[in-house]
Image (cartoon, rainbow, N blue to C red):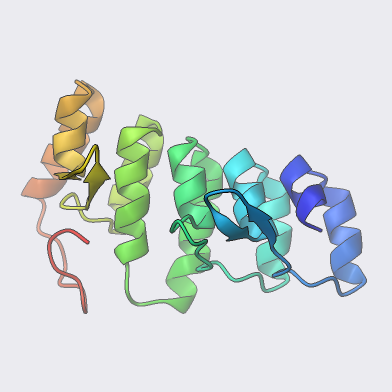
Amino acid sequence: MFYAAQAGRAEVVRKLLAARANTEVAVKEPYEGYVTPLVAAAEEGHLEVVRALLKAGANVSHRSRSGKTALTAAAQNGHTEVVGVLVDAFKKIRKDLRLLDTALWWAVVLGNVATVELLLSAGASPHATSMFEGRIYSALQMAKKQRSKSKLRLLEAALKTPQPARKGVTKGL
């Protein structure tokens, strides 16, 4: 299942799912820990595989040892359509939106403008923080550091927009 998902073989994945293959059988990757087929498919941008796995009940909030999830993997690789599908699935099962914040931070650092915009519109906090080169940086600080004017404009606009209160979430992570 894992390798078919990682390779984007949607038809093979659907056949395996029809035969009741386990969506959570993970492969151990160096530095990452255990990664599920959903994380692998999302990282590679395989939209149809992601949809099939989610439909079959794959765990959208699985985290590897390093903290990688399907959402963060798709966001940092600029797979905006996959991010959209994962955000929809994630919002159906969770009220805590901190994972959106982590995905936003990665989208600012490695992803694209469309993914940043999607995550902000989904409720990700522009105050999202993470560690970089031994220091904690916000998404806004990273956009400034990278001189990404378009991402910076989106984040600054989001800071001016009132954000709804979120249970269990403070500024940053």
